[in-house]
Length: 257
Image 1 (cartoon, rainbow, N blue to C red):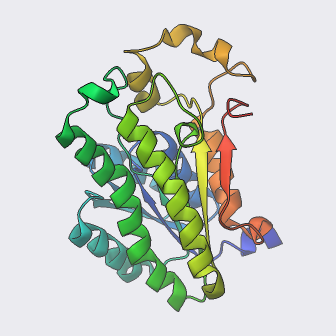
Image 2 (image 1 turned 180 degrees about the vertical axis):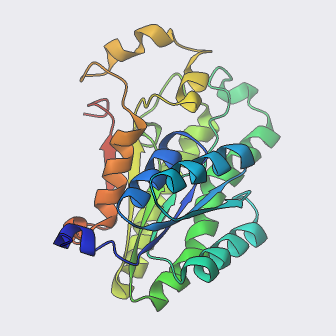
């Protein structure tokens, strides 16, 4: 007999962007482990297909969709494919993002680099919500989680200024969207990961920090794992978090305390 906790996931559908690796892959797998069908989206086709393969290996249901989140047409097509393939949309992790070069100061940041980071990190989240919300409304509700960062809660020497601005922007957009969609039973929250042991994090830090010593600056004394974030995302989407919307949840080992 299935447990009430498992029953709540039965027949549900999730969409995860930036799912080719790291937090996105871990979250797609966590949804699949709960019996949720998952549309895996990323610009990295090889990585996205590998995520789907890992879902299939555990008996889950997944499909890959190649995606540039900065394209309205591609985001629209992604959501339509998700609904066509799995019958609807209940949960979304809008996670696709790029970090930029943290060693480049504000005055040296090129305009095209600013525009590129904003297009992926900030515009991409807006486009995803724009197309996800109508389908969730048709289902009578849903839950969206947007990926911000500890860099959206505090300044950082190691962050590209456009990256920080985009992550602060995600929090403002999340809170406003949460208020606008609350009457439709669509909960919208943001996560603010700290130093998570992913290829993107290590790549971002290696130009400005001694990566081997980074853990000493984290109050809990260790890097986070992608699975730490995945557990928080699935919890925010679950009935256990049914009274939470418009929140920005730090998952950072105490860095923002």
